[in-house]
Length: 371
Image: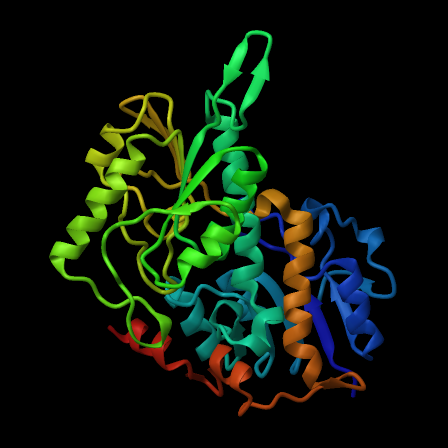
């Protein structure tokens, strides 16, 4: 029996993405699945209903064994409408959405949280956090350039030479590296701050410099070790010195399932040049700057501090295309002749499985929600 794939229309505020773009929707259809796209689901990502060929565009009716796809968590009302034994796949933000997780558990929905996909080589093409972080880092620099009263590149004009802006990127993960590359392409001088021992090579490969904090944070397995209070103070002092000369700061340090670390303190902001800009891309999880206000642009001591939310939706078309491919790469290895047969012993499937058989099966999420 052919299984149904249902693409939900997103309901979260400022969400413009859609779980499947027309191309990937057709690829699922070509695998023998019945694909239903909710009307106007792709409208804000510039995928009108008529662009979805060979799939149904209509209000969905839910039945058992449906494969339901979303970007952000569906509403509790939508979860209640799903049939038991359905499969839900999306960026479910389980650590902050206890009500959603418990609703999925109560409704006996098998759910997969895309942000829980393990960071292993085989799963890179499925890693939605990375694909969306690429867009976030790019957009963060564009926001900084837009808010800054300075130009980023060096320009030699008849009126004289304009020196390039100095940009500091905090965090050299996927978003940070994309921010570095984008700021460099705009012509800025770029420095990066990251305590992880493998960051230096990655940062320098993009033409930026890693801020030397005087602390060796190398630990076992290539990860950063826990720092002493003295080392934390040394790092903060080194960062403060560099921020005092920065014209723009792009902050990207986020930890899945935990509050974002406060890295930019009030006294650091007070030392920054007038007209400087901070784009806090970790705003949704608390922010890296002590002065960030979620979803707002504020000024403090002549420094502009922006705490944008849902940044990936600023490039909704490409964000949706990348996210749809992540979903396809996750599910398609287990698909044949219109049927999804999951291997729950598979490392990727096992680690991103959130709820199943009326239980919260992801151990870390369950322990967090039980606290």
